Length: 400
Image 1 (spheres, helix red, strand yellow):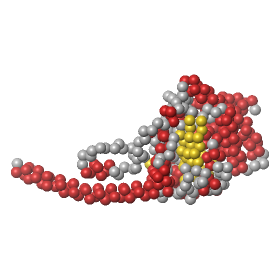
Image 2 (cartoon, one colour):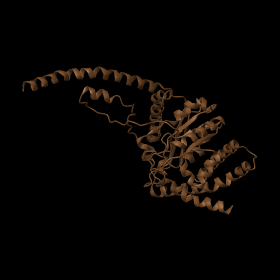
Image 3 (cartoon, one colour):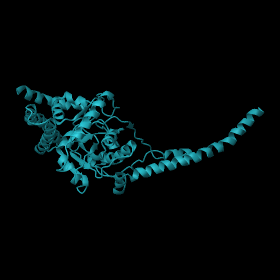
Image 4 (cartoon, one colour):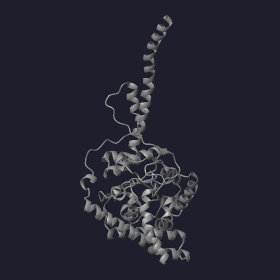
């Protein structure tokens, strides 16, 4: 027992050292990476071809000039120190509370009084309880949860695939603490995909193993660098996901694959593993957006726990659905979640509803088809205009 408590206290340093690793808490499945296109608006085009081709880029959200919570509620030095102290106290309390609270569950499972599935569901509830109450004892963050309580999936939860952006190493703790507010009292148990390297810390290893979370092997890159994953690990991950779905669990993952060091600029390149899982299991994809946690514990190791603000927000979007294509899911996730992660508020209601019901994507496909047709019409015209000039040059050369 002494050894366990000693390792628990020592693990605080390892947990803080996670800021140097490149993994995230929730990782995606096997899929093609959808790269985002960020193009600037051009006032004057040099030719018809350039103008038409510029319209073929994916829909981009317009820039917003209004102030964000970062600028309106920035912390002074004393406030930053207090918030940082409370946050470290919270992390330390979790390092003690989780092993002590999960130990009886471990004994019950070892004695075969409860099944593996029961152990995982109880452990998830214990982790949520500890995270929720430790945040009440050490209130380092001002939390705002935005949920549409009229959404049918909130009132009567259906099996779903949950996706969320990733902005800080605090994400997993807030997802656990706020799960009841986000998904309701009738919420289904969930298993989260995580980077296997997090198991080097005994506290995260204990929590993730007891809850039955699903690991994925991935290189420990710097945050913001390209993900390097082991394709062999995905076979086991898919098998574990299928088993979890059969046992009545929802699946949670993060399409970016690692913490985003620049959420104010939008999302990182998106993996579409959520689309693969949803298609495989015939489950709708539900979206969650986080905002502000990077201001307390930043993924960039040069910033780390330099607390500049304590406001955070989480938005649970209604109308989860199946997507027809991986690109449609990536574009929708980028437009909706990427905007909230950068600004702490939704895109305009009319655009939001169009993205959620798929109308915006159908409009985008129609626009791309029209653009291709215009390009096909313009190319022969450009070639025809260039032909006389080439003939004149040929005649001049023949005379010489």
